[in-house]
Length: 79
Image (cartoon, rainbow, N blue to C red; front, side, top):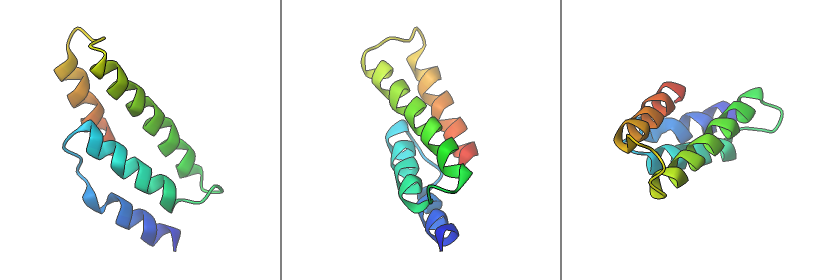
């Protein structure tokens, strides 16, 4: 059942921006069980992407468009 729920969670992939990537990761978190090691990787990536989004809003990066795109590309590899 968890696999079916995870497949539903990633049905919105590919993500087009960080907000949609975060939404997919959030859905995955809800679909995966605590005993599934994949949930822990997803949570790690989710937290990193949340921080990237925060730092983009704060204008921390010298090349924000590159960082934004990098996060989304790698999130789509994950999905």
